[in-house]
Length: 491
Image (cartoon, one colour):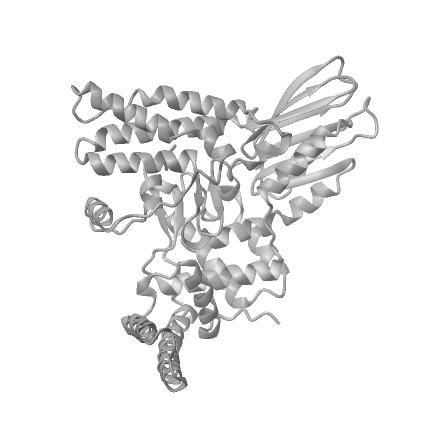
């Protein structure tokens, strides 16, 4: 039986998981806990120093002495945590509890404030309850692209429908969502109440001129991804029952469906049928030409033809003859444009920031360009995940080529934009030229993709950098990742 309670026991489990990910803020626990933690580290350090002084050998008595002390400190830490989680559990179970959602303009999303440990632990437990109860499984972008490539490439007759849900998160109706949640008798009453409070809070703080009352889930808040998947289960099931369907995938609000009609002479209107299924759930397809496309890949299409299909950041360039189908993968035009806009923003920001502190401005410029052209581990809870020019575009390699037009376009535009770099002393042409050459030598998007291991970076901030940027941010602590991305939220 799944323990769905918002208890100190479950919060302790969440703490142990999230602490390993680096997600626990210092204000989540009493200062006494961190004092004990420092004491533990001090005793462990003393043990190592004593071992080193005795050539790595300690007597059994000394080993047991240190083990007893460290075990005692760990027990004291655990007791402090339990007491803190008992208090947090009592707050969550209070009928007046709410998440204190707030809107972050630069992200165009909502969040739970960092100074609210009760909301943090309650949200994590709520996400687990919904996930386990409804067996939510979110799709893999890379897996979908790989499968779609093989299907398009196989040369068989087919119709491909690509579409998406218009303003998906904003249009999910609260009443129908709650009906779907209540149909499952396993989800606890406490969990359902917290979801209701989340929706009520969202109604209270959102811009009702953009999102009507009784509609929408807060983008950026952890539970919303799970609620959206629960809501779409019926849509997924209905589309999968359509005649002629051979492949179906959905990634959040992006949908791809592949059909093989019984006869080429009478091809059903698959898009219209999908539209009716979505409308039955009080949602709408986005039928604009850049979001919805019906692609016919069948031999009845007279002569050789060339077409393309864009999905999940990739563009499939398709050439078909009577006896052959060739598929090449590139980045989508939108993704290429995003890289170019971010390069431009980084250069413009450097030109301005270098007037005030050239040393830090130059280092931040290089970090931003390495972030775009290189590879790295994500920070905080996703630190085990790799990202960057290769890992974010790895499906380009499906077609086995060693040259990609999208990478060439980005690199060529980057080289041209480097000439917009300016040293703070505008009259010093020699220094400006040195900077431009230095940047061109250091940054190469094609190298970042094809030689990913040699272009793998970590982004850490020195103590002096931290002090400098903390002062600039009004004494607010900021990570290097956040600093790098701070100029790109709207690009």
